[in-house]
Image 1 (cartoon, rainbow, N blue to C red):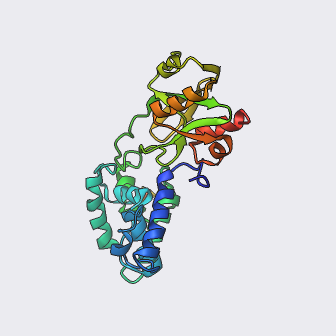
Image 2 (cartoon, helix red, strand yellow):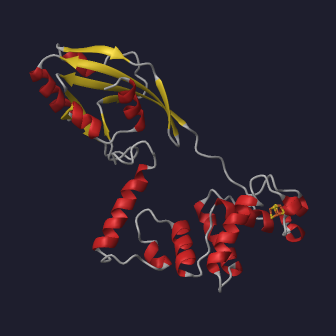
Image 3 (tube, protein in one colour):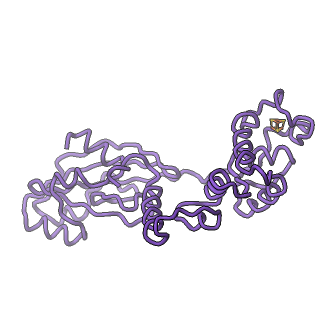
Length: 275
Ligand code: SF4
């Protein structure tokens, strides 16, 4: 996770590791060579399984990515919402009729490439070999096909991190929640209680906020985070241990904090302040 830090898509790192283990231990090092075997691998969905099965093992399995969806929807004039999972089967059935049984690898690569280069979001219809049979071209529907319902609205969230320190010791914990799962973080308060003092600080007489950062904007796929960092000096060792217990956080040295995998917004802050 430390090596992957900052790249985002942390579930990919976890899946890759789990899959490597599964192939090594359960499959005795033999990588699956069929769609049905590939789809069982963690993190491998229908698109990836079909792409690997056809391109590497010549299996007749159509791929369906955004590019293929677009071309098929426009060419055949299909108004089914491509954002809805239940419509995937419908498109797959069309592709199963079209796929070249002798060269499924070339067929799949050609379909993806065609959607990426000619039947692109801004299609180059003037140069397209499918003009005479294309529904969208004939009916001037290139801009409305494919039908794709709106993306999930971006949620705004406020996080206040409290970097509690005694001597050169700090409190951190490994996250088990979905977002940033497996990464470490400082104690925090979520949901916009900015400007308030964290109630646990008030309880500990030797704890004082020595410094607070500006609100930092951090974008995730479906969230816009506003993150502030507060440095809290705890001057009593006893209180520091009490605090760790109360919050259920672990104690780490400065060196350990720097070696733990953390979300990008935290590593950026630590770099900024030359932690
Ligand atoms: S004519 Fe235009 S819309 Fe139709 S398949 Fe070709 S590039 Fe796509």
